[in-house]
Image (cartoon, rainbow, N blue to C red; front, side):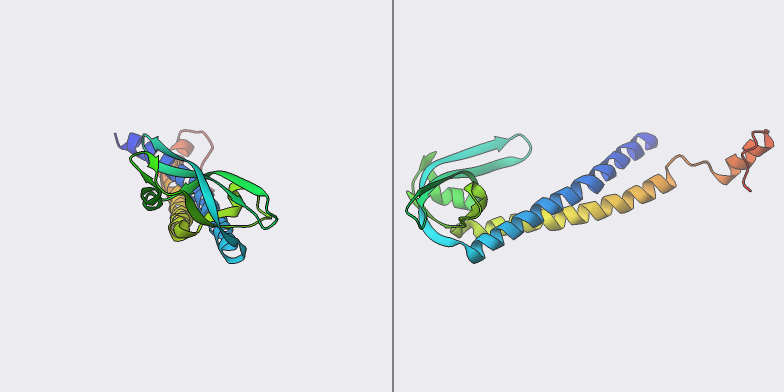
Length: 177
């Protein structure tokens, strides 16, 4: 039973050591993207053309919006599947119907599609989620790396000194020098 628990713990630590830094990197790049769009982007009104709610079995509910707007040249731009918080979704959607026609956005022309768009009224919530991913991933990675070092060092299958001496006594010739 203890061996089974230690085996599962080792896998959990390996996943944390790999997945934590990946999550931290994804969060960090998205924080950088949102900050760049908020600082340098052009604010405008966008027409809401659609909204989607995706329910995961374990991950909860995610909300997305599709929008169109005119850029500074007067050309119509589109962005689909822009993530929004549950609070923002409640403002825009009621009884499975879109109740608001437009939303304020900031967009950067040099970042095409949804990467260059931030919902102005939802930017703080998006940054909070991204920072959680960044810091949570970093913490999980540190715990995973330290935990792996300890688990594989303490329970990694090394022979103890007494078993090495026993091997020497049995004539295997693998003693400690």
